[in-house]
Image 1: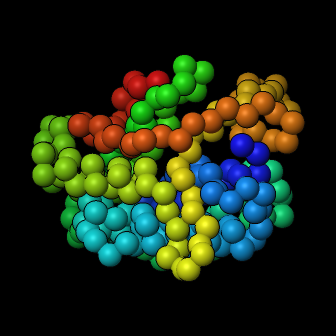
Image 2: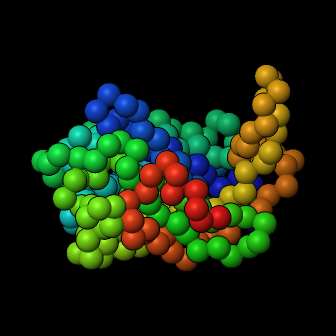
Length: 218
């Protein structure tokens, strides 16, 4: 696959006054379509497929409290710097309830298909207190998280005739040294080696994910 097939989608929000960020990677079905229009389609598809599809297991459903807001989406191509779009949005969870501390999250992990690439992970804050039983997620809530995980693992499109489709991907990040001498990781750039896989699933953790437990799977 060409590097220009790959897109990054950044979902930004707030939990109270604290910023939240979730990063997703997608592969477009149409190679070399690194355009602003494609970025717009990806944003539309993500809103329709994950945030607001019309059922209660979306990101704006009652799995999350009204204290969790989703405020902005940015989509950009890994290869073409002019192919990007940023859009303000206004969605929140729908459950009016007390919530767990912001670092207590629902956690998801992809399957692992290559030894050289770790699983993809996602964490979402805004968890109602009633959705945790001493850290264990009740069965009824877990079953709903399975449905949300299926949305995260599903190929999405914006519903228009002839629409581009975008499949969830896990792209291996590239190690580099920052200007201050710190070791870090970034997404590949043109000329970098590219390693990736398309996950079959995003499986929810049975327990609430904390800053400690989020790193257990690799």
